[in-house]
Image (cartoon, rainbow, N blue to C red; front, top):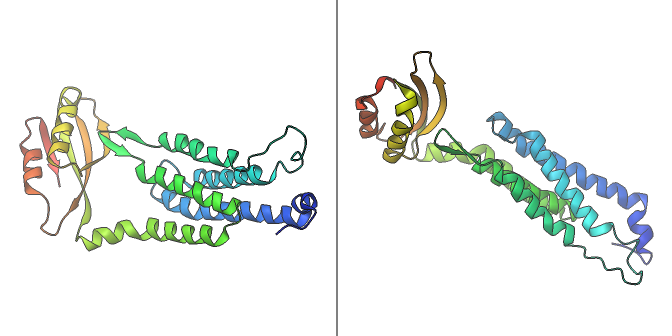
Length: 232
């Protein structure tokens, strides 16, 4: 890849333009993957995925090529993997901030994993592994756009919602949600609204199976003493 004068090869314009191309391709991959998250209104959208991919590429380039001008001086040592190795630590810290519990439901796992994977794609671009980076990008894009809906169709499930109104919600809402999750851990809380009279309206998301709704769960909801209405 480099000739005898490696310093001129690395800091010359042709190779500099190739490094810029790596950054551009990394940003493009991050944008396409992040667009799907943005459409679903997740905590990390296009900008977060683009920045994560670009930063990973940039750090790899800096780690691998930035210290050739000082290598050779007495007492100077350069480790081409040192900065790149800390990308994983940094991106994991960022992803941890995307995972949180909201209304008794864990949110952000898939998005955090996606940003982590995008960072790996950015590192591949930064190291010039174009085929690996393109292949990983295609797998991510296909998986994010099609797999969720495909699995639902394969299992004969359909997404549905219902609204439940609980009186004296400040006292009984947590108790109700805990009991509901115990009966069916796959039910998700999509929204929560408090009324002036102290009641709470809860939007619940669930999937109907091949045999329809789990009647035991909805029997529990309708018979819960503090539920005033349930619209399925």
